[in-house]
Image (cartoon, rainbow, N blue to C red; front, side, top):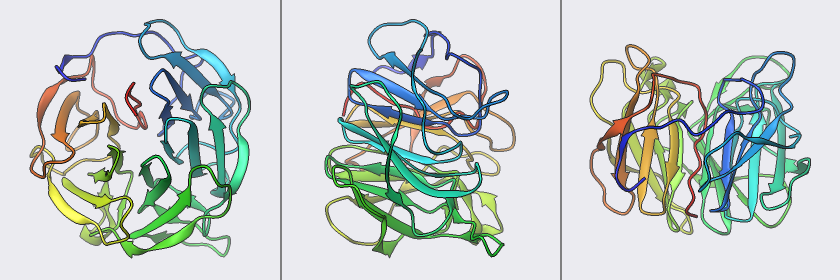
Length: 276
């Protein structure tokens, strides 16, 4: 994470899959869930971050692919998803394998948002609502839950600077970052915008800088952190890319190159790192 370079093979998930799976970590273990795969979305796997090798089955989630996910070092949270366009929020205790438990609900059926947080607060950024009455509402809203207290999400009262979905999110202990995605305020074109909030302070998102220049912006990247750097990798701009880029979370400014994936990819979902 600190050095960058070309990504190396780590191992394999228990089944193949795609379309924005969740990534959650407690600093020792990373959990990946759920994803579109042949015949099922109900799959969670885990790896030990420091030891390469294949993933092991963790249990089953309550939500499908396309959800927003975050972790605080103890719990992993997954909210919404494209399977039946659910409003369900569920959680796991990352150190203990087993099925996810019900946490509460989003304010409506929710998908393709970004999520991140500090030790206490989890924030969901942007995404879209798919009400049972039909149609899609693209959001600039930020929603809030408390990681360790189950219950429904509430509107944080402040908003993103655009209406992003399929954006990448990460954080350190105090600052939440959302980067790229598709901007419903810009004719649904991908965007290179990076924005941030101070998680403990309710206020509107602020401009951070921009991802590296590319035609069409950035769509469906992965995001992860080591507690200092935010790293974003693999997205669609004018084509699918293998690029990795980084920011220093506490220093505003544009992203810089950090290396390359082993091959180009997108819709790989949230990454997870071994630092909370």
